[in-house]
Length: 173
Image (cartoon, rainbow, N blue to C red; front, side, top):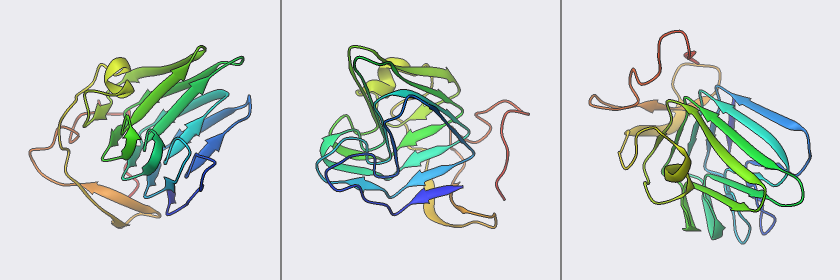
């Protein structure tokens, strides 16, 4: 599925805004071109609960004056957890921490395996054991022959091509 071209104004969470204590599961998704003006998390904002992200692309999201164009995770009295596996988080923009921010007293971003970020200075770098500071050459958000808009991998060379073990990913095409 694709979550794209949404705006949250000053609230945050341009694409997804999880303020509940429930779990959110994101699998085989493209979250791209979402924005927030003053809030945090152009693509995703999590302030309570758990978000599990697998086999997804989070790119080209914007938080103009807030934290994290890609994923903003903020814990407080209740835990706020984001688990990420086989996912590219790249090309996002914000005033602070372009791809990921992890703030608050009760929050965690967990790298499960095989994640890629193009920024080695933000919270993705603190939590990911994957590849950093690389350009994986994503194509534009468009119909690439599947059921949803996606961003095709361009290359080679491209560290995301064959970066996930066989049997752990699904082609949306």
